[in-house]
Length: 137
Image 1 (cartoon, rainbow, N blue to C red):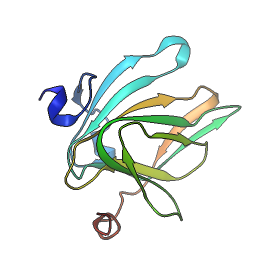
Image 2: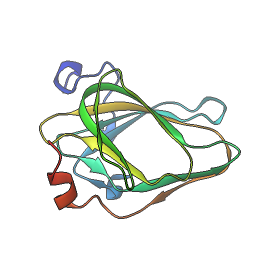
Image 3: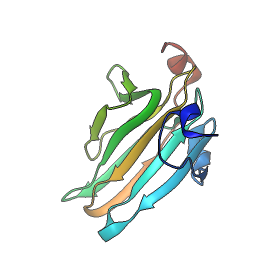
């Protein structure tokens, strides 16, 4: 797979070791972990998305997504899903239940930046239902 096929200049990486928390196939390439700031390229095959999850933390934490290619979705619990394209930025506050992933017909890639904080953790929850995902275009 070259960068033009899935729409990003960063390495696609290896099958995601957190794949049990994804519906479909995703890939992970860790770019750096300088001073505790994890930066990774995450690539989703069409229709792949992660489960609902929450980034917990004290005095900081959360996650920033920099969309680098394809078309995808981001949704916070209780809100409508937002369509994402290359160049979009999503700032995910601590303790917000959410999911993100590819559109049904497109690869999707983003850089995920873990915001440093105290007592940070990631809580994986239930998958996004097929019914809920199926409503997205």
